[in-house]
Image (cartoon, rainbow, N blue to C red; front, top):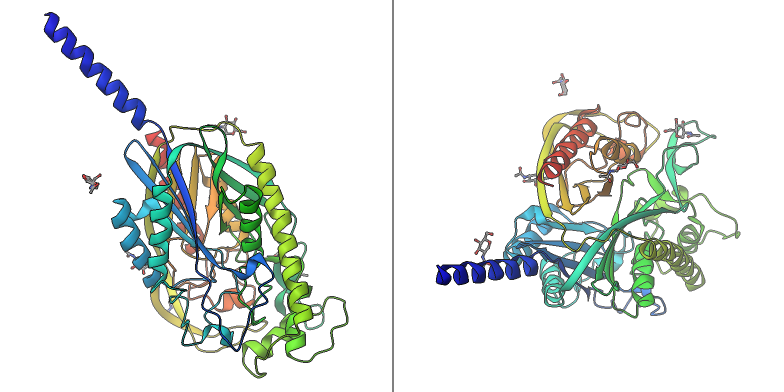
Length: 467
Ligand SMILES: *[C@@H]1O[C@H](CO)[C@@H](O)[C@H](O)[C@H]1NC(C)=O
Ligand SMILES: *[C@@H]1O[C@H](CO)[C@@H](O)[C@H](O)[C@H]1NC(C)=O
Ligand SMILES: *[C@@H]1O[C@H](CO)[C@@H](O)[C@H](O)[C@H]1NC(C)=O
Ligand SMILES: *[C@@H]1O[C@H](CO)[C@@H](O)[C@H](O)[C@H]1NC(C)=O
Ligand SMILES: *[C@@H]1O[C@H](CO)[C@@H](O)[C@H](O)[C@H]1NC(C)=O
């Protein structure tokens, strides 16, 4: 009798110790420099933080479940790149694919197209980065470093807002045709969403943020640029003496640009020898000849590149300060969050295009193969990261949040794969003849919006049932 009492007490103590130890979130984060080798014909300024590109990872674990949030400062990635990342990282962490979110910041200053800069033998496409053979190797390095740095941690969620963005689909008053230009009455979301990881002394170790705004101002400027998201991440990291890793992911921003585009436009004007008045110039007429290579891409006047990078740094600092303000007032930290994921493709009818017009006129199409779109939910405690493998319009983001049964629903796009869809417009915007809708391979209608919203709602419902 005595003996069995001792045995069961010891067993209880052992179970208590194991459970207590296991029911504690651990988290770590790391950042790896992936700036491409310098092209001798296109020297950088080397004056701004945003001239460096990074891949960042936050890795966490609780009760034997692991997860990773990975963000890379490039314009986009192809489906095979995502699959390679998942192959390496999922094997290393021993997790299912859904427990890893892989996103890009979408900076147009790190683009494999449009700038001669990236078509060098040093750096072909967006795969060959720095000393890493592939982006997946760099991702794995960041994940390994983050994993090695894990400490007991807690996670908390809060939101704020910023008025730096604007809807970008507008009827040109001169021509009466659709074009890309600020539309101050069009839909746009101002929320900044912030998921903060603190250690158990309430000191931040990592932060994951979303906000809808295209980082387009460095496009074709001829310099490597992480744009405002890079400036924001670096500002946050420096504010915590490099003890924090700050990842940014795009929210629903398919139809959203920065309000201010003057400095980037001036840089393009200087490439094309167009007079820079000082006032804001129309962007599209300056971008188009360079984009379509009617004009050669030569070096911009460095005066305007400095103005551009100073403005992008300022935007990054303002957004970074808002993120830090939100981090500072985040409460309800959870040191024992559940970690859960589910993801699946949805499928909609597709179409193929017979013309090339960019905007303002109807497109001509024929029916073509179905289009698959990745959707998913990644639950971390009482926060869920709702994600889509494409660029969705503002209203789709709103509908995802409206249909979610969880209050803390972060919207993460360009995540876990690249759909062949192109932009995904909401059903109200789908008939607007803008470049986003004309370039879409989706048969026009509500299929994509309906299926994305309902599948994510189902994923979230399934997560909620486990809580
Ligand atoms: C990987 O995870 C599975 C399922 O959770 C587990 O059975 C297995 O032991 C793990 N392998 C390693 C090497 O950790
Ligand atoms: C602005 O956007 C709204 C909503 O998409 C649209 O109805 C309106 O025509 C646009 N206004 C202009 C001036 O383009
Ligand atoms: C093209 O696809 C749409 C959507 O699936 C369908 O409604 C329509 O009938 C198809 N048209 C033709 C000519 O097959
Ligand atoms: C969600 O938000 C609503 C409205 O603010 C609140 O009443 C409710 O308690 C919240 N639910 C949870 C689970 O926090
Ligand atoms: C899911 O969709 C992507 C494209 O977004 C495709 O490459 C992938 O093969 C699909 N996966 C499955 C399991 O069908």
